[in-house]
Structure formats: C-alpha cells, structure tokens
Length: 610
Image (cartoon, rainbow, N blue to C red; front, side):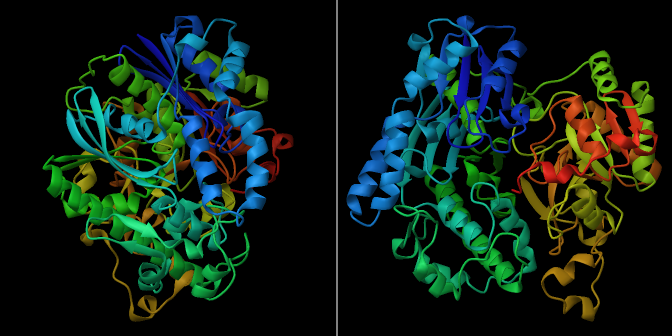
C-alpha cells in the first residue's frame, strides 16, 4: 500500500510517502526552490519522494491532501456574513482568489499532478481534515500504542485546538475549539505587534521572551483571553482584526498596550521584550492547564503534540516538567509541512486500516532524516562543478578533522546523510561550533547567520551525557524541549550583572557552555543518539575526547531568510557567502582560505528577510 501525502497552497508546502505504514520519505518544497515557506504546489518534493520510494504516481494507491477546501471556504463565508459590513474590503479581496483557485482545488490538484505524470489520479484523491492530519502525524509516528493527542495552531478549517484519542490504528477526535478563538492566532497577533512576520517570526518572540518580564500577562488575561480552569479559552474579538481585516490587531489593541506595532527591523526595546515574555507566559499557562486537565480526564499516560503551537519548545518543556503525563512526544514537523505526512499516515491507518509498524518502543520518524542524500562520488562531482577546492578523506579523518576545527574555535558547515524534515537542523544540514566559546553566539548570529543578535542557539549533546550537563534526563532528539543548564555548570552572576536589563544581558557568560545558554539559563536540547545518527554521534564523541565537553552548538545550515540547504551546491554557496571556516560535505572537506576568492559573495542579500 503506497500513499502520497501533500500539503500546499498556504505555507510550508511539502510531500511525504508512506509504504505499508512505513515512513519512506518527506520533504518541504522550500528546500528545492530556495524560497522560504514556499506555498506553491510541491512538484520537487513529490518528485523526490517518488524517487526515494522507487515509485511513480501510477503506483500510488492513494494521494491525500492535508485539509478540506470546502470546509475552509464555509468558515470564510460564515465569518464574513456574521460581520457584515465590517469585513467587506477583506471579503472583496479574498473571494475572487477562492473562486478562481482555492475552491476547486481538486481540479487544481489533478492538473498539477498530471504535470508530473499523465496518469488517472482523480480516483485516488482523498482529503483529510487539517487537524486530523496534524493529529495523525503525531500519534501514528509516535512510539505509543495509546495517547491523548493535542493539536494547537492558528486555524485549520474551523478547528484551532483539538483533542483526539489514539489507540492502535484508530484516531478519534473528541473535542475542538473553533475559530476565531485560537491560541496560535493570539501568539501571531503579538508576533505582528512586536514587528516580526506572522507564520515565520513566532519563534523569535519565544527567543526574545527571556530578556523581558511578563508585565502585560495579567492585562492579556483580563482583556484579551478568558482562560478556563481546564485550559479552554475564548478571545475578545474587540481587539483583533484577523477575522475581517487585513492586519492581526486593531486600534483598540494598540491603545490597550500603549502604542502602535513596532515597525519591522526597528530597534528592539524593553517594551517588545516584556510583551514577548507576557504572551509566552500566557501561552504556557493555557498549555499547562490543558495538559493537566486532559491527563486527569482520560487517565492515559502518554501525550502527543502537533500543530504550529507545538513548536513552542519552552511550553513543551514546562508540560514535561509538570509530569501530568508520563511521556510526551512531539511531531518534529509540527507545522503545516507535517500535514503532508499526517495525511499519508491517516489514509494508511484510518482509511485503509493498515496496522501500525512497531519500532521497538521508539518512534518511526527515523530521526526525521527523511530528505535527500548524496553519495560521496556525487558530492565530489557537484562540488568540482561549483569550483570548490576540497580533500576527500576517510570517515574517521573527516570526523577527526572537523572535531579538531571545532575545538580550535572554528565554525563549520556539516552536511551529512539525509536532509531533515521539519524546521530544525538535527546534524544532517547543520552549522556547528564550540559551545564553550563565550564569543560564539554573537559571532554566529552576526557573521554567519546574519540575523538578530538576541537569538539563542541550541546544544547538541550526547544522550548518555545529558543529565550531567542539563536539568533533564529525557530524550529530546528533535530539539523540541527546553530545560535549564545543570546547576553545577552554571556561572554565578555578580550583583551588577543581575541588575542588567534586556539585550545588556546578552554578553554575560552564564555557564560552562555559554554559546548555548540563554539569558535565563535555559537551552533548547537536541539529544544525539548513536542509532539514529551514528556519524553525528561520532563527531561529538571525538569533540568530547579532545575537550572533555560532549556539547556543541547546532544551528540550521542557512542564513536569515534562506531555507536550510538541500544540495552540496547549496552548502558550498552558503559556505562562500558567510564567515564559516570549514565545510564537510560527506567526506569532502574544505577550508575557506583554500577557496577561489572570486567565488566569495554578499550572500545574505540574496534572500528576503524572515
């Protein structure tokens, strides 16, 4: 049974293939087109997935789209009718687009698929609901035979929050909160208000929060969101404009919070930091209350999370810390890209009734390494054509050379094996560096990533050494849980340092691994496991042998506004356009000083800022 899942036409288009219940391949379209959050039909991602499965469209038993367009149109129409004449301008802009393209997406899907391969696909097309796709991506890929599944995002068709119960190959939705009441849209409203891009900059708000104080949290609870004891909620629509207008918030929102939205790229002030801290605190409050209530109600020890809100790894860490659920598993591609995988899994298990595949108590995501890989011969040929000057080393020498460079304070590009699925680089397409360096966080942000200096970096840590360095002893292979650096690894603050505010806190080393320690002593953990990524595990093990430290910096291999690199050519271009010192692509290793100077470029200007 071969099932192709597709997400498209909103943001983060993707494709995934599941064969007899096994996840074979998955990738986002942006990685191939080099357009961040590409919403177009995922031609390249589908072609890759079919190739990885050794199949054609004719071989697919089902082709599944991740949501139901008619239900989405129903929500749009009902919302406008309920608010006439307030939303007429937005209605006038949206309806022609829907009538021309979105309402008849089945016809559009058939036409697009026939561009890939001219076969009869109409009879194979299925549609899942948006939240069913999210829930399926979490539960059916999880290690659990039974779980509560919580999905939270902006909005699907109608649902913004849903609860499902998964058992074996069954998944039943038991409750929903509907639009316009949405925790995801509330967080996005503050993303917009603090000057970042909606559906892109929410993680910046999360990263900015520790610099501030939650001074506005009570005001948010009093005026913007009514939170019940069980975590359910309603938003006061008097302060928002997303149902009928062209912006997230309105003038009343501005008056409530004391001024207009920050202009994008304007100087960040303490006010934005306090706003970020406030909405983060409210979000954590909602999610924790909901988790505690669901645990008590259903008496199931396992929780799965999906939807864009599930990428809030700080809140995830608080849920795990509360221990309402014994185990928590979060889909690494929790946003809309993961909807493609969820659609394929839902069709496989719910529609076709296939049994789930057991993986010995582990999840079935294969470490999220589900994208393209390249042989060493192919890598060498591609790099030579790009003008790169490199050495071909053995496996052991590649690891030894890279680890030694990190120990010497150099920053390296690490391009190995299959590309990751989801927004996080997990040691397949990563920029890596020495976590012990007090200057590395600022250097990587400003000279390699070309992004805001406040943004934190994640640690990759050997799983077996996790508890020695962090206040957690729980698998976090997908970088979706935040915890504190171990108390005995933290650095005590002086009285003057404790008195600092905002961005002034940035340059104070707070632990033995300052490059990955946020200003509140927290870190977004990636545990590295020898069974899912033996090469990355071997690299960090060698770094530990050289330095005594089993922790390195891991950030995605790209610059601001660019998708994570996909091919060896992408990696070389990024290497030549940044201040990276070393690049290892497979066993092809190159240093910056050995490269043709004419290939250097002002790379960061090639991409629209995110």
